[in-house]
Image (cartoon, rainbow, N blue to C red; front, side, top):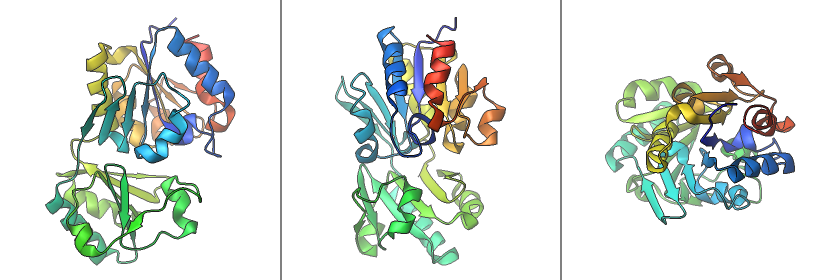
Length: 264
């Protein structure tokens, strides 16, 4: 039996089905792991308002990693660690995208508030992992956008993703997810793996005793660092290539299947 002391769960494409639901089997199995003394950590690209609607049914989750690591909260300590993109860098990125891809839809997350200069069409909402009835970003003017030090910048246009990395890679992490459609930009020091490492240091768990589940590029860093990475059946090939095991898809209770096999 593996000596697993902590389990890190991504949400979209992993714990959540394609219908954005947590199955009863996944819930029961994760809860059983917690009841044996294993720490459960959720690490997602989502902001709190979009993630908490799912994890509110997981009251035993103490540490929550949002925005791919740019925001970390601990419920028991009522504390948080927030990493934002400096205002001047954000301004330069905004100007660069507007000049090189003027049709790009750009939005800005600022510690659980969401802003844009252009309304997000319903047809594009799914790329942000948001359901039709969820809150939409607040439409503001460009002067307000220029004053922000955002937690995360999101834009829908992968054609200049490499250009953004080449120009700003020393200052920010740039990740393209959702089939390369959604480009996510965080401060250079913000990543899922660094946030999880911070949690592990706090709870006294070593990386080799961590099982991590994921499906997309923002999980790669965790897969390289944690002792037992498990790729979903629907995961990108890059994750599958460095996983210890490939489980069922998110629509077939892949998290529960792997936990029942290796942990319980």
